[in-house]
Amino acid sequence: MASGIKNKVVIIGMGCTEFGERWDLSAEMLMVEAFTEALADAGIEKNQIEAAWLGSALDDVNIGNSAIPLATSLRLQNIPVTRVENMCATGTEALRGAVYAVAAGAVDIAMALGVEKLKDTGFGGLPIRTKGVVNDLWMPYGSAPGTFAQLAGAYRAKHGINAADLKRGMAHVSWKSHQNGAISPKAHLKKPVDMETIINAPMIADPLGLYDCCGVSDGAACAIVTTPEIAKALGKAPDELVAVKALQISTSNGWESQYSAWDGASIRNTQVAAARAYQEAGIQNPAADISLIEVHDCFSITELVTMEDLGFSQEGRAAFDILDGRYDRDGAVPAQVDGGLKCFGHPVGASGLRMVYEVYLQLLGRAGQRQLRKVNFGLTHNLGGQPSNSVSSVAIFGLL
Picture (cartoon, rainbow, N blue to C red):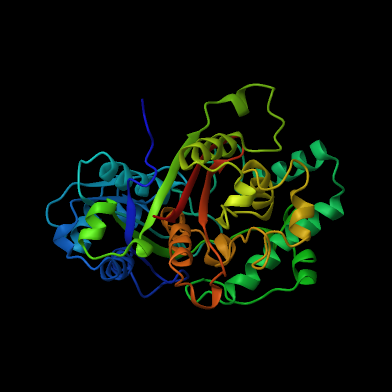
């Protein structure tokens, strides 16, 4: 019977570029930047890496459809290198490949790197493969803001929340992230925004205003993983080892969009992936046990609903918990302490690994001005696609 991967794999090095409009660097150069930091952090030689996974979701022009750009950019020594894509969970999918390879004993040291360079199109939204043109082939259910606005409407209708309370709850999500992004040196957006500006911003898709939507950016992030035994042999102390406690992914099977049972007010895949991750990690009470979360805040309503799907807020209560400061930096469960997608933007292939990077730094006490007082377990969450047709990932990390 499967026993899971809890404590079988540790992260020994991570790197992350600054996210933003990186006009001066190619995708390959962003890979090098993230990898160089991760390799130095791991304290190993490049030739000790035995397998690698590249996550890139939309950047076919710069990256292509294979993992060869990763191998050539980093001059990897003829090792197996695999390109993966799983919508917005692409970075986490790359990490899953590396983690599972080490846990299985197939390799001793593996690497995951996620990268996306999206700003070169000049397009303000998510430049899907048509490079800015939304059409029926790639977006059959409407635009991303439009479909997540429907999530907000369904959530409000199900729980009987008035429009003003929901709007203030969503605005606080964005306000909190901008406060955090202002002290995050690698974030794209580093300017605090006040609540009045957020609430009165131009409407994008009712009730989502401008500040309820994350932007896109260029960026890369990298993780190097191995077994605890090898990490210790490399000279790593136990309090330097960030262990993977769980890594679960759940994908829509058509139930949401093809049947009438779904109410449109929650994301079933997130609930399923979270339940599996908690079981794998041995988490009994996530709201009490997990001290840091990085969730997929592509839109403020997504973060709000995710708090309930992950079990941190009771159904229908997330907006009020948010307004009470539960998820602020000094709250019970700090969320997006680096600014999240809201301030980093969303270079799709890199986002999942960028989230892990923040959790990794926090667990090691290396987050600088953002450092929280106590971090036992950290959780990352990605949601790819649309509420009616999605993939969700949930990963949990803690010191060995």
